[in-house]
Each structure stands twice: as C-alpha cells, then as structure tokens.
Image (tube, rainbow, N blue to C red; front, side, top):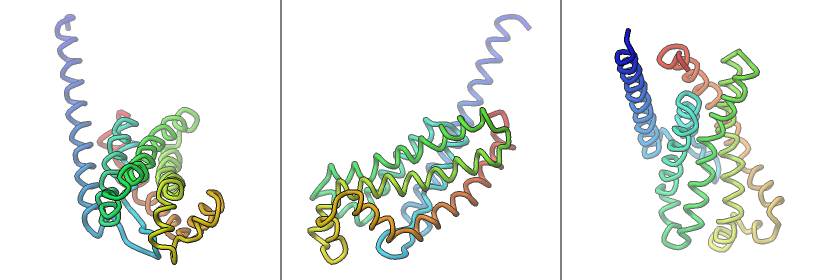
Amino acid sequence: MDHTQTQSAKAQGKKRVNVKYMTELALLTAVLLVMAYTPLGYFYIGAMPITLLVVPVAVGSIVLGPKAGLFLGLVFGITSATQPTGLAMLPIIPVQSLVTCIVPRLFVGLLPALVYQGLSKICKKRTITTSVACVVAPITNTILYLSFFVIFLGGYMAKTQPQVYGFIAENGFFKSFGIVLATVGVNAVVEALACLIIAAAICNALLHTVNKDR
C-alpha cells in the first residue's frame, strides 16, 4: 500500500469514527430530551425531585469522552432550567436560575470521563472503573446542585417559601447545605444506585462491543 492509499485509509477510518461518535452522541441527546420532558426523567420523594438524567450523561461521558460529557451536561442543565419550576423563576432571577441549573451539570458531564480515564491507567478491571465513574455523576450532581441552590437561589426561596426554606435565611451556607442534603438523602441514594446499576451496565456493554476500541 503506497502513501496515498495509506492516507486515504486513515481518512476513511477517521470519518467512520466521527460518524459513529456523532451518531452515539445524537442518540444519547435524544434519550436525554425524551427523559427530561416525560415522567421518565423526574419523580418526587419530598420537595426535591429524583432525576435519572444523570444516567445518559454518565454513559456519554465515559463512553464518548469529556467533550461529549460536557455537551450532554449542558443539555441536562438547559432542560433543568426549562422545567416548570425553572421557568417560573427565569423571568424573576434569570442569571441565578441559569447558573444554578447549568453550571453544576457541566461538571456532571465532565468528571465521570476524567475519573474513568484516570482510573483506567491504574486499574485494568473495566467493571470497577466504570462503576466508580458512574457513581461520580450523581454525587457531583447532588453536591454541586445543592451548593448552587443554597448560594444563588436560597434567598429567593426563603422569601417566597419561608415555610419550607426559611431556615436558609437564618443559617450560614454549611448548615443550610447540611439541612437541604439531609432532606434529599433518600433521593441522592436512589440516584446513585440507579446510575451505578443502569449506567455502569450500559457503559460496560458499549465499551465491550460498539466502542471496544476505546
């Protein structure tokens, strides 16, 4: 095979990889959107919703890499801002609402990929690396979203719903964060378990078959 043929083969191979990458990213984006705007994505236990949107975000981040994870995290954040509660606050406190909904979700998409790539260098058991990386997504979502909620939306929520969030106005960040975290403890556990079981299984299947070259 001469140089021209080699270059052509490489170009075709790269094109096939790009097509596969974009196809998988588009499918995960579609799944994310369907889940976000149907009962599949959110259900409630208490005041805060349990979201399973972390599952496709974690899968995309681990299987397709950090750039795809960031994109899916952005989509996750935008869909969160366009839920009924988010839409109600957007006209009143638009910057705070968008920052709270979007910024934490960018890290939800980025960190699983980085953790997976880092662990893969020191641990060859893919089941372990994918499981740990998948759990990172819901943990990141819980910690960062609640932190941003207290910092950027706490004052507004304490003023408009004092019977529920009045404690935020009376306490500092750490105590308020602890109280909110305690109230959504069950939600956080359910999200973590769902991501561990569902997302890890999907990641392992894709990395073993469709994306076995990764």
